[in-house]
Image (cartoon, rainbow, N blue to C red):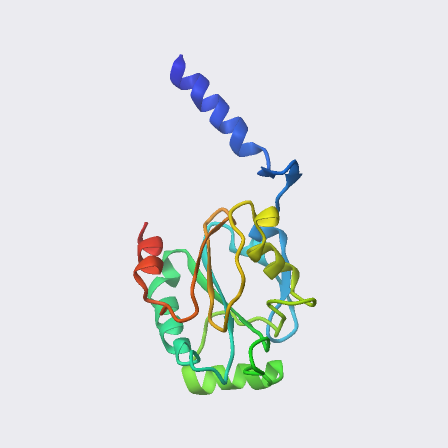
Length: 183
């Protein structure tokens, strides 16, 4: 009896949206973005997958991380994992190219096959709504953060909830990311 009551309350809790400060919080799946070709990309299409969201740039000291991101993607993509790159020109003009130029750069130099999205802003007055959600505890229900540089990584679980953030200098094969992927 005790277990069935507990199970009932757990099921009720899971079925209601997460509440923070009396407001419904969105999940990662509530957003639509544009892919690098300008097509709508519904993040709800990634339900059931772990997602690593990375703001990228082509002319940055961290740009070689594209190689490890691609390697990580290929290694784990059949285990319900995807990486999504969001080019951004917020840090010292290190992503000045057009979407087409960015796509060509990523393909030619790093063989990127993981999904790349259209260039956005990841901070400031024109911050993209997805990055507003990623960086605001009031919106994501988990934590506040700031995008400090190119190649900052946000970990999203299979249910569309923010798990954690990984600093830009931390490599894609960091202990934190690998432990999360293998959990």
